Image (tube, rainbow, N blue to C red):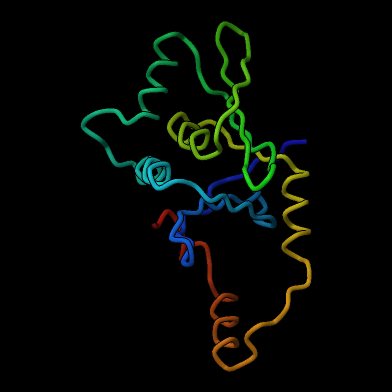
Amino acid sequence: MMIEVKIFGLALDEQSQVPILILKDMEEKRVLPIWIGAMEAMSISISLNKIEMARPLTHDLMIKVLETIGAKITKVAVVDLREGTYYAELYIEKDEEVYVIDSRPSDAIALAIRCNAPIFANEQLLEDLEKHLKKDHEVVLKDEEAEKWTEFLEKVGEEDFKYKM
């Protein structure tokens, strides 16, 4: 089953310096972090912040091509995680026919933002990730600095990450 998710924000993995797209379910109970490329993060950020470009970027061009041929993206879905790679699908409708096309999640979401298409995630994927995140983790830092970080992380809210990179 698929459940609707929304973009919670963009962040930068401090260790690897790779952008992370953070999705959350509509109830904000489950999170889906997806490490993405810098160009895709830039494209997503531009669209989220409604920055107008003089010339169309690749994702804008794709939307224009679809519109020109009478097709539209009706939804996108993050459907699987295999060997550390997320998989997504674009649902494109033309002449009452629906085409499902394999996509990278970052590209699918960049397109969804531009055409106001809903974003979904495989519920089993979210449940599996939630179970993985809830597993017991070994405490590495047990000093005052670790306690400060724990307190800080408990206070972090949506506005601290919203559409920033």
